[in-house]
Length: 532
Image 1 (cartoon, rainbow, N blue to C red):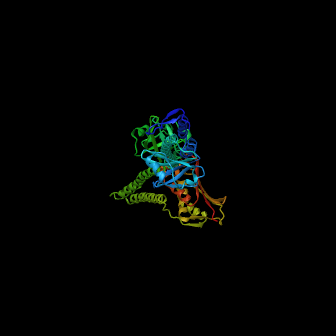
Image 2: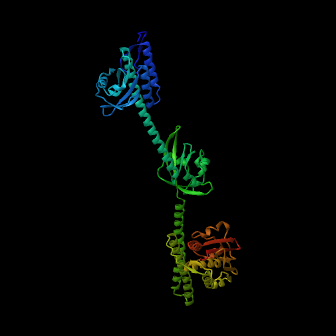
């Protein structure tokens, strides 16, 4: 090669000394370094090195070999030329020497590569610091002069540096991809948990505005996420305490309470749901602290506990009344100056109080059996006329005391029966007819019919009594509920009759309906499917 203009060529970040190379060769090494540095990834880098080293050194064949973990063999990473080998031993003399002295070494003598090489072959060690990476083996017809060997050494150093850097970058990229994938998987799992959990979850920013609103919260409140996001939770849910006092979500945000508080929140339908709510910090976003709120809907449990407490309170009161009357009348019979006639009167009153007490106890036991699913039913095929006619006959004398007319009509064919528990059906019919008589003023009328229609037996009890207000028409089926009027107070009762009656009907696959007008009367309708 003509020795023209000389150029100092840097070794691109290595600690090796600089070498004087002819200008054209130095520019070739610089171009090699630049091209290698542009490789987008590790596989592309291998291809670029093989292609560019072949061009730089005007080689006919070039191969890139990586040192295996066993440190005694090399694996082929790239070859330019017809090379039918995939591994080489490190102890091959020229390779071992090049790696030892860390300088290009001429390959001499016979070896596995000889059939694939030209006359002159150069082994270029690829090393960084104390680490041996492998070798570049290039061959060409012309000999490698000192200038060519120095250019090859410079290219080998740049190759070693690029391979090490790319390897680190590749590992970092792989690690980043794994971490990113793991993070994405965890976010998907978290999103699935948040979306699938039964608890309502929302996040609020420092100003109390809703940022995240999961599907369960939508089911609890009736709102869509898109309708409430960005709005103040305080304004949407109007929370209140058990003492019916306004509650501020900021209290939980400030205290970051992990223990639960019980509050009521407003729904989209303008009803209230009782929830246990707790809060926890959700990190910082945009310089503002965020809070996660978890809502557990306990409306059913809360109402059950409320009714249970009310049940115990009212039951205690209701039991106390007949017991007090019973004890009082019995005490009067012991008065020394009480006549025999007065004693009989007091005993009759005591018997009435005892009967009311027995009725209340039986109703309370029925409620307990119903709510604990201990209600025993033995359905048989029967005709409702048989039960209702007996019920009407048994209660005619009660109606007669109030001068109430009793009408009864049966139009259900004898062959059309229903499947029902006889004793429970007697209890249903007795409750309905007795209620009609109780809440009908003197001189009124009670009409009872048994008929058929639409594959059903239809039993109706209609009175001309005080009626039920529209607001309380559904509430009459609640335990202990009574609409307080002069007549209802005088009629007494436990307030459990219609609750028990409805349960007994529905647990036998029947339907109980009430229609009523205040001051005009009530109609109770019971429907049972006809037996097949």
